[in-house]
Image (cartoon, rainbow, N blue to C red; front, side, top):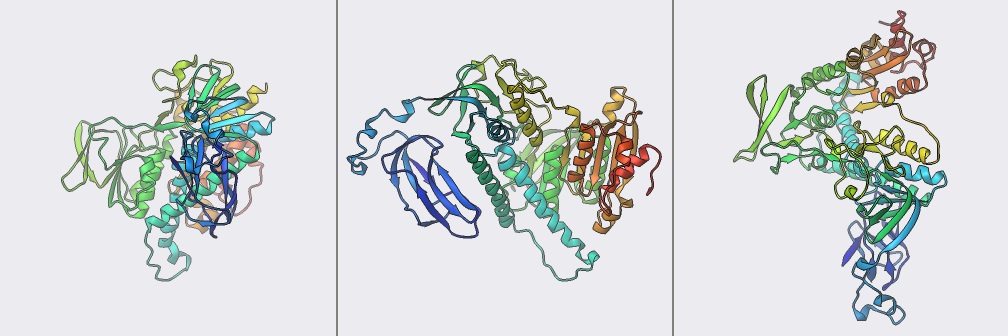
Length: 563
């Protein structure tokens, strides 16, 4: 028996049971709408999590409910007790149990995975006239929305506001604030943001008539995929199953206090101390969050600098900020083991420059990258080729695999694992199915690190240009000379631009206030071939942090004004 419960729904008024679409004895398919819940933001559809027979309905229309109330019970074997049957439905209940019944669907497009790549592709394809189904084994929104980008940024915002309280006096605001971190409320707000967005995706998929299949998708062949008891044959297939955290296989990596980023999003108490293994994007974002919340943080990174995948100046900048915020960093350091003391603390042993060192903490966050998620997908039943070392599915510039009607997007096929890249790749794949070619330039993909200050980059790094022997010019404008940054008391950081001798923009690094938004302007310019000269002729509003971009462009042609 499977209980269908009221989900956690953001609403400032009571949750009311709306229309009930089924009766006791009705057969339902997995993903079928069985009732509605009325919230302050509109109706929320409740769907069957398993195929089966409605055994009990425990609520009636108009009843007030709360999260985790049981609404209905489904017998996934298709059997209910005789006393629960009405004479009119006995014939229905004598059919073959649903776990042996195979239902067949034919679609123009099947998408496996409903993360930011999959659900965007589904809506985009539907708007372009395709009959679309999407399969998701967990929650709509995937890793990014549920346990990645969105919940992390909610906690980043809590940390940012908490940090601002220390500057109130500087802005002429006086008072005894007695500020403290309430982790229960931090987590509650994070969950409310996630639930709101998940509901939005559900609404959009329904609005665009996308068939949603709840369950694990498994290839039977190059042409057929099974999801639960349903077999789908689609003219085109997109694999968008994302990635999973890659754990560093060292002694003690499976100890209870060694957590990954998912667990770090659900700590109900701020640890007194935290060791973060990995100084990449995810590791540093959590390092800054928990440092602000009050943890003593130590980041241990194997490479010679933090953020080793970005421009070297970004790594140097954030190392300086870490020092200011008393976040200890150890680069060029190889973790050897993790051991637990009798007091429940964790000793991380690492080697640096031939010397063995130790660091102790209450929690250890393992943040050592992500790997393609293909487990259980049944690729062995297909002709799809993968990278034997990384497990990533091999695709061309249109996200097409070696099997012409099968595409792969996002983390499962990309070396660069970014949600916004996955979304764009989904659109590129759909366009290609419709005989339109819009390949993505890997160079023009922006990346953001939500530390405080933020870091954003696009294009070539300076070290990449040197390694490839590409001639370039470089300029830099510091936010300390920007009026808006001064008014915000956020003057640390800079805009760095890279350009060719003929004025073609090659790359940018922005470290400082509004970096996550400012990088879009440079990305638009690079994507559309805007030259440095044209950028200098563009009027930027004053006073804004965006003026730093024009100043850096002016410096590239020897006409810098404010620095």
